[in-house]
Length: 308
Ligand code: SIN
Image (cartoon, rainbow, N blue to C red; front, top):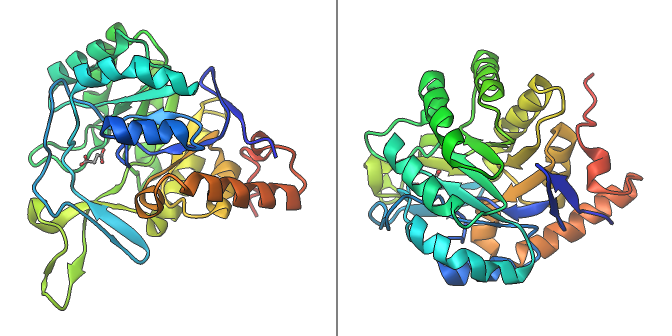
């Protein structure tokens, strides 16, 4: 089965890849993605300098999903810029995720990584885990101002990683802003921010930062992810490349993201749970579903969701 796709002008041998954040911080993790059947290597969201992130425990997986409050631990943009030429030997696109705690930080990280020309830059507008820093993607004016400045700095195709939206009015406003900003792709969704998972035996939260509040991922967020993929697919008339992220545990989940309009699909919690072997399993399961349904490629099913 042909699972290759064209995404924002970049050819991917497989429509599957890691989500920014999942097993993609260190050189070893990035190289493991290079060797695995991931269609691209997506870096951890990088800030201008190394960050250790939030205190442990900061990630917890449970039946049905995960909660995290990592706090953007990463090696710093200069370190990823130095690593990138080595990652090229795997012969697959590198997508650099860029973040910051201020506009100046976003610009500095973007400048450092753009200098070595990753294939795509994904601007993270949606980290819910930095105390005192709201998710920029929930503020249209702030997002517009930030993207306008990043546009001057990022000279490769630039997309955005958005938080989940729960009302069409927010998706409409965000789509209008993104159209004006001229983004090359949209990645939806980041984790569902500020959930709380409780251990009733120990009578405590399962993670330490922010009093236990963190981003939810995994199977339980799939309907929210699919709704956002579908909403942005429709708002852009099917012409915006969409990276579907959220709740991808099986090949059927990848297929559902494709039906809703995703051009390619990212894997987070399932990658954390299973390691990089997850891509081979998802590929096999997706291939079987597409063949059984008479599709010749993943691209063929894109956006084909029927509304009743
Ligand atoms: C984190 O590092 O806290 C997660 C990153 C994100 O949700 O964007």
